[in-house]
Structure formats: C-alpha cells, structure tokens
Image (cartoon, rainbow, N blue to C red):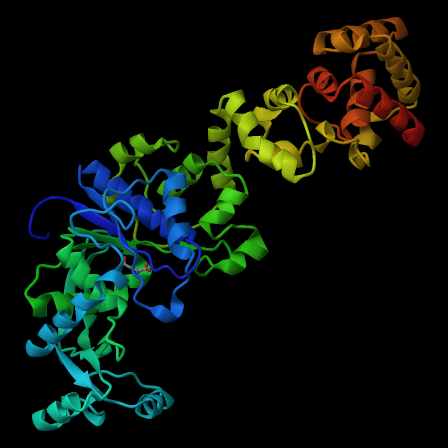
Amino acid sequence: MASSDRVRVRFAPSPTGHLHIGGLRTALYNYLFARKHGGDFLLRIEDTDQSRYVETAEDDIMDALQWTGLTYDEGPDVGGEHAPYRQSKRADLYRSYAEKLVEAGAAYYAFDTEEDLAALRDEGVTYDLHTRHQMRNSITMSDDQVQDRLDAGADYVIRLKVPERETVRFEDEIRGAVSFDSDEIDDQVLLKSDGLPTYHLANIVDDHLMEISHVIRGEEWLSSTPKHVLMYEALGWTPPTFAHLPLIMSPNGGKLSKRDANTLGIPVYVTDYQEEGYEPEGLVNYLALLGWNPGTEEELFALDDMVEAFSLERVGASGVQFDLDKLRWVNEHYVRALSVEALVDRVRPYVEDAGYSASDDRLHEICELVQERVQVVPEIVTDNRYFFEDPDEYEEAGVEKRWKDASADLLSTYADRLESVEEEDFDADTVETELRNLADEEDVGAGAIIHPARLAVSGRSYGPGVFGLLATVGKQACIRRMRRAVETLG
Ligand code: GLU
C-alpha cells in the first residue's frame, strides 16, 4: 500500500469515445471498494494520447457517473488536493520522472527514425531486450554521441529498459501471484518525441503522487502491470495493490464488443443504456453481479447495500458472460419500485418520441395497468401501442383460438351497449357490468365476449386486465375498434 493506510482508488479513463459498459463496471467496483473502506474515489482523465482524444468524451464519462450515482471525491470538475486531475494539465511533470528512470538505469534514450522502427516491425519483432542492441539508442551509442544528439535537439523517446532474464512478480488481489518473464516484455516508450508521456509513465507517476492505494482495473491491463512494477521499483516507490477485473464476454464468445450491439442487441455504451430506457439503479445492480457475487442467493442490491456486501475476494478471475435477460430481469424490479408518478415522468419522453400524446391522467392509468408487465420503461409504449393508436392487425394465433362464429354478433351487441354508457361513467366497473349482463342474457360465458373484445381493442390475446384496458382506451376508441373487428374478422 502507498504511504498512508487510507484507501484511495481511482477511475482513470482515457477520453477516446463513449464510456463502454466495462468502463462503468470498473468505476463501480472502485466506487464500492472506496465506500466500503471509508476511502476516497477519484476520477482522473488520462488524456495524453492526442491522436485518440475525443472532445466530448470527458463530459460523456462524467454524465455516465452522475447518471448512475457514482460520485467521486476528487476529479477535474470537483477539484481536490492533488489537482489537476487531467493528465494534459500535468504534462510538465512527467518528463522529470522519465529522466529519473534514465539516471536509475531503468530507462534509456532512443533516437531511432521512423524507418528504423518500420524495419523492426517488418521483421515482425518488438523493440525489447533482444532487439535493442541493433537500434539507435543510449545502450548502443557512446555517452558523447548521446549527449551530442541531445544538445543538437534531435528527436528522441525514452524507453523502459526491461532487465534481462528476470521474473517480474506481483500479487493481484483477484488472481493471486502473477509473474511475467522479462523476455516477453517490450521496452515500452515512456516519453514520446513530442515530450508527452505514454499511458504507462503518466499512470504510475499519478498513481504514486495521488497516493492511490489500490489499482482496480480491467484484465486488459494485466500485461502492462509488470512494466509498471519495474518503474515503481526503479523509482524506489511502493507499488499500489493491484486487482484486475475479469473480462466481460459476449454470449457469442470473445470479448464483448461493438459487434454485439448489432448481432445480439447488447448495448455497449452507457449512453445506449440511457437511451434504451434502463434504470440507472438496475444497470448498476446488474453490473455489480457481472464479476462479483455476494456469496448468497441475493441478487437485488441498492447501491448502499452493495457497498456493504462488496469485497474484492468475491470477484472472480475468469471472464463473465454478459446476460441481457438477466439485466432485464434486474431492471424490471427497479421499474416496479417506481411510484406511478415517477413512472409517468419516465415514460413521457418515449411517448412523445413515438409521436403519441396523452394527458398525465391518462398516462397514469396506463402506467398503473402495465407497470408490472414491462421490464424496461419504453416497453410501456412499444409493447402497448394500442393505448395510443388503433391496432392495424390482429394477432393470428389469437384470432384462431378466440374468434368464434358467435363473436361478431356478441361484440357488436356489446358495442351497442357501450354506446349508451355516458363518457364519464366509462370505467372498468361499468364496462365489466355491461359485459357480464350481456353474457347472462345471451347465456354464454363471459370469456365469449372478453376474448373477442380484447382482440378487437388491442389486437392481441394477452395483456393487462381487460376491463381496465377498455376503460383506459376509452369509449369512442373501444366502440370504433369493436365495429372494425366485426367488419374485418366477420
Ligand atoms: N487510461 C486507462 C484506461 O483507459 C486506465 C487503465 C488503468 O486504470 O490503469 O482504461
């Protein structure tokens, strides 16, 4: 652990585009760990790679954290003792550490030209302890030659000098003892010719200066860690504790990727979940389970309960498969937990986006009817369009099963009866009484009218309670739709 015993963790995204769902999970686990231990959670923007910089990405990241309630104690917009929290604003700082590494014999200057490097690539080899001896650098050049070049202002980079025949070891909280053969580690560029650091240098310098105690990040960074460990050692710093989270896998195999959005409908970016109407609490709850388990049967956790239950010991090392059904199942519980008023507010934009209109009272009625029947809020609209427009077709299987010879006459009479109900009396009780009276008079079961009525009004053979449905659709629309069904279905 770093200098003090205080738990300090960071989420350190590079602003290269929309925040990926895996990034949000990393942020969440850091957040949970910090809160659990009464520590600090930092947001640090790692924006030293100009070529991959996307201007809107930083806002996108902050919006995602805000939307999901993952509040941070220090960050670019909230400040903190170790400001600035944007690496581009700390650019001057990194060079001196690169030079210290050179002095410590753990890094070296390299003057290779683009052509030199291209030749290396053409050979299919990396710049490492096997190839560095054939390149133009301070290992192959005399001190005077190096100094001359530096004095002449030649372009150079500073590279990590990976030691030969060594095993680099570190403990990972999730994976246990991890070791890498130095033979397999390349001489990573630490300081680029434009004077800016690469991720590796800036990352360890900041983790040290910001007193980060635990580095919790995705498994894709595991192979970078031995490089980091070498730098910590050379600078005489105690490395933080590492914890590499399992990869998020596609149900089709391989890492979850943008492709899965198209082929499996799995949203990949946080903004997509937002647009598709997921509850932030539902998403966070699901992500908590995507790599961690509480060790009990319990699966539904509010953020505070997650904090209580969370531990890195219960995070698994092997890849976890994204399960959209499970996410939807979790989300459904958060939809049910909303007050009807809140649900009305949540659903209104989707109603308007679909080009429909409905008063608050009407939406209230609709929400009451279907709240328990949807998994994601927009389904209130997309699965129940009959509340907003006449059905333009009838579910085939439903017609086959439910539309009988007598249906047309019964429905037509029912429509006549409904004509005589006053608009203001058109509620679930009244339409039910009318229907049951008619069934008695005709000596048929209520189902002989209920099923055709539902088909006529909603186009489907299933849905919320039929009397509430009819009342909510309203008198005029019910009658119009019943007459139309009698005409089309005969
Ligand atoms: N900037 C890296 C990223 O984009 C941070 C990796 C780390 O947490 O060290 O994920």
